[in-house]
View 1 (tube, rainbow, N blue to C red):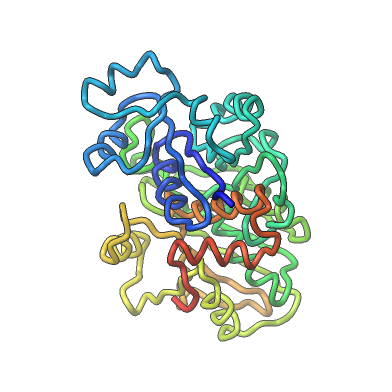
View 2: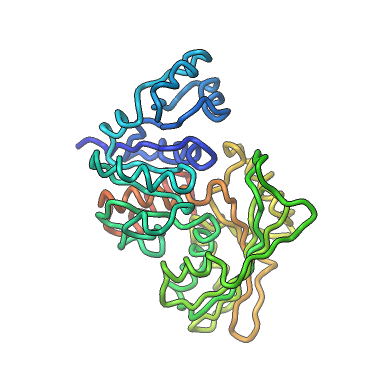
Length: 342
């Protein structure tokens, strides 16, 4: 039986990482990537060995690629004729337009968090609602913050139940390399509830959630403070055991030097992770506290890579490759080298 075939549409910040996350999956095949112009990302791909085939949205622009020697394998629609699932990482609003092409070619698609929810059949998270994505044609991922937030809350919920949460998000204002936006010497706030709290309730409707968000003038990582009311009292030791058992959660200690978002980014680079990426969220051991039975803890969200494992989970779900949630996420973790106990 041939492996399911995957294409990545949009080779930008997330698309590069989707390609790198899909390529090592031993039970699926990455056919190629799609983009519109010879961006720096594509120039770097070319210079580093062109290990992904490139397809163009507009074939009339092929001479621009020829001029700098970037090989082109065909057009966007020619790629769609070869694949089963498109991982759409295009800018917000473009995915909805691409959906018509996906339907025309009978291709399933998984959209990232920037698209509006109505683009998809299911708002998807690999751990929290995998079953709802099985066999569906169009899935939409939660945003980076919501993805990491749900990982942590879902882990607690499955062990002792969660009644409600209140969150405060301290988020980066722009991606590294962005020159078209940013804040200087300012902390900008959004209205309550923020979309991450609302989105969590769409995935986990039994949890009452609200939240507050602050934009900060940095480019790497977000930190989320969470106050969760569990349905059963839980100790700090048990909570740490829950987090350590989760392959996509890394428990870290300030005492060991993990005292900031940048310390985690540097650690990922020192590990040799490409681009300094980390798929896991981090929980600070010293930042866990209690007010009565309410739990207070903080997590770090590596915004550029955190949604990649859940996107691959989405491929498994929509193609019904695995119908068991833990089997599916376990295979994704295995191919990405994610292990519990870190």
